[in-house]
Length: 259
Image (cartoon, rainbow, N blue to C red):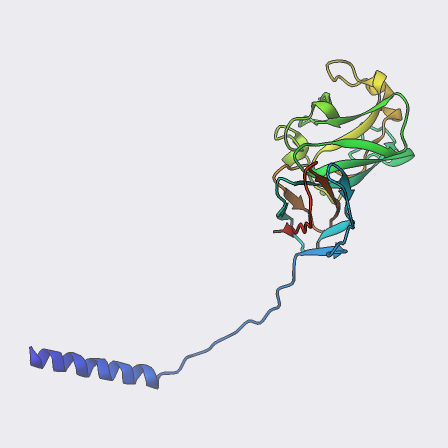
């Protein structure tokens, strides 16, 4: 046993000596700097003053920009409690377009409007704040796969349930609006502002009136859990809205996280 032990010890000694004597044939190294993909802009420390219980206070705009060459999924959330309900709103421009079913991209023309809508919150809301037209209503238009040859039906804003875009909306993951160069938002939901006479009770669209529609100028998202996709080069502008409980009193500091 002792002889075997000594033999193994000697072999190990020579092995260590051999390794120490041998260098290497070649080597290489890599140095790089990792840049932040998501950049936040705007006033990040907002002092909003005094507010009474039961009121709503609006914060200041914050921009979320994706500077990376690939899409990024973020989570927008906060540390609010039951005394304060927080939602995040954004704006969407609408415009008349040259209706051409032979073209993938319809050119903007004519009247415009602005829509304020919920990006993150307990429920989706949307309203026209500029360019209001009498006899018009906002709708969510959920495309079918063959969107020009197989038109879909429109959904009234008050009838929307769940996140946008719907999973069975071809604009959610099938139709790619970046590929055509139309929008920076490759996928999402379409909001339109249309004459009430152009939508029947079943949501069917009277396309003969399409020249008077105000169409989306980008695709939007709504997610109750705060999960959002930001596409390369896209800047999403959100404004926090704080709804105060009737019985709330004292000092509150609510921090919003972009994860």
